[in-house]
Length: 160
Image (cartoon, rainbow, N blue to C red; front, top):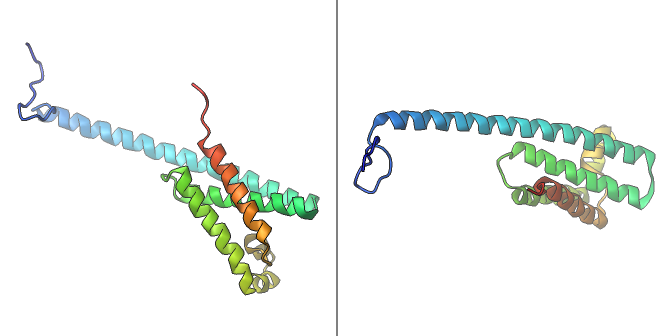
């Protein structure tokens, strides 16, 4: 059997020549660069989608009323939290992102029980949109629905 690249006999399938090790290192660097570029592209997409979610949330807030409006607004808030967590933890799987997003939403809702967000909202209007002002258990359901919807869209794949 003629071999152009001798293989060591110790069970290691790597070639004995150092040239292939150098090529493997370069290939690894190229692959790492491609992964990083992919993460940058994903973050750009997430930021763009986040801007659309904010715009949609503001439209829902100012153009609609009632419990459905509140529910949809809270679900969109949860989608935005999911996107922010995804942006920060871009390498994490969707399920982990979803768990963190739900926990953050629940923490914000429970924080409203302290009255601090309501006091802060009197000083700064944007805090009202960020933290809310009053606890509502239905908001927790909306958060779960929003995060589950975002997770479903995030993990959806085109059929082959």
